[in-house]
Amino acid sequence: MSETSDVVITTSKAAARIRAAAIDAFAAGGYGGTTTRDIAARLDLSPAAMYPHYRSKEELLFAISYEGHQLAHEFVAAADPTDAAPIERLRTVVAAFASWQARHHAQARVIQYELTALTRDHYRVLVRMRRETTAIVRSVVDAGIESGEFTVPDAEGVTLALMSLCVDVCRWFPAGAYTDPLAVGDLYADLATRMVGAHRTP
Amino acid sequence: MSETSDVVITTSKAAARIRAAAIDAFAAGGYGGTTTRDIAARLDLSPAAMYPHYRSKEELLFAISYEGHQLAHEFVAAADPTDAAPIERLRTVVAAFASWQARHHAQARVIQYELTALTRDHYRVLVRMRRETTAIVRSVVDAGIESGEFTVPDAEGVTLALMSLCVDVCRWFPAGAYTDPLAVGDLYADLATRMVGAHRTP
Image: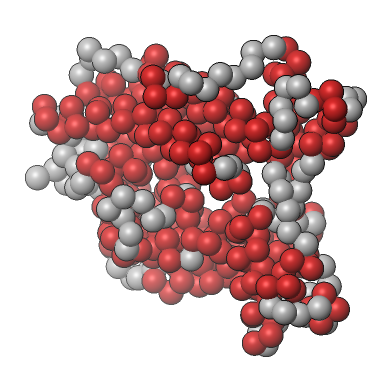
């Protein structure tokens, strides 16, 4: 993530504990309904003790969102078997992204639903990071079209739908019989191959 | 919606204006970050003047969510050509639901993201309403499996993914080339037929 390498997420244990408590607090009361005092109280800290780590609630939200986007991107990028056939790449990338959203659904919800609370500059950083993950999926879709293995109505639209399908897992997971992140990944890998027209009817 | 017919949404113009102002306020600051005073201020009302219509912020959120779920359900149910072939029903129902989420994305976001702020009883009412819309999609999927026109890995999982794909439109719409709700409906109708294995490769 070269474009965003100027941002550093504090890796101290104390800062990580604060981020985890903030995710819980935002998940329970929403960003707007949570104060830095509420977050500090969850850790038996004074608001002053939190200040050296995060100077504002917005800074904390940005750190959570940045870390989440970075982890999701790295997970998907590392999973992508770039030398494999497009259908194999698509299955693997979609399964990775969908299962990440399931596994980290509490954090992912905060990241997805509170983006508008960020400053303009912070928001822009995250939009760039999201585009890098979308670019992986788009490159797989384009590779499949190029090789003739995929038939899609519109590469942009299919990519948008694939990303949307994966991201929304964090909203509903777990549901019904789908309580295992890996099962969601398997189902979505199958559906993705169908969406790009790579499905072979039996 | 027989199960929920005990709930009445106030149809007065004043109440509708309050709901519209609340949607704007919740969209801007989140439910947790908004007070009834904020909502009243948007309409140049005193909080006391709002009280006869909605006695609390939660009651207002429930009214917004109930109305939105009811409208979405009625739109999808009215669109469903129940006597048509499953593939035609699927296309029509998915296009209707996806385009509804695009057209009403501000209201839909409030409904989707603030559900956890409702009382337990109110939450249950909405879960029942959501199940009724899901049941329409599931009945179409089942009809296609029954007739042999659809081949799906798992009827529950495909239904879950179809609903998720449509609901998440409210999060991203508009994006890129997709700024027309009807264009989203067309794309999603096409993708839905692929997801159920009803796609015929050219």
